[in-house]
Length: 151
Image 1: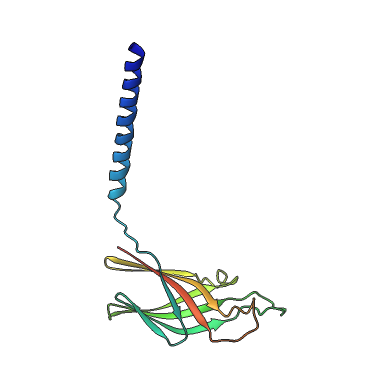
Image 2: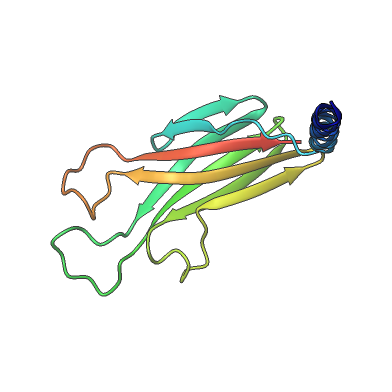
């Protein structure tokens, strides 16, 4: 009989400990101030524009200098997407996003963070097609961008 009371006490304390730890974890996670929305996928051709919430994005140009497949090049090159970004119809920026081996050498990034008052935006260049390192086809160039917004 004495053994069963020890088992009851153990189960009681184990259950109480579980709920205590669960409560601490729940409340510590609920105080997070940064709320990010899932990335919004954008695909643009040159001079095409799109709107996401209060942001208007226009792809102004694509500068392609990646070394084509089967070619001998001095450097690997890069592709740069130049975006015009307008937030709330008043804040305008030109943003350059880069993909390719030589981006770092030119001090260009594949992502750009924009902070305005209480809003934060992260623009990330996913790719520019066609990729001359993989194909010799010359279809219309497109930039694929992810946009995240957080408070």
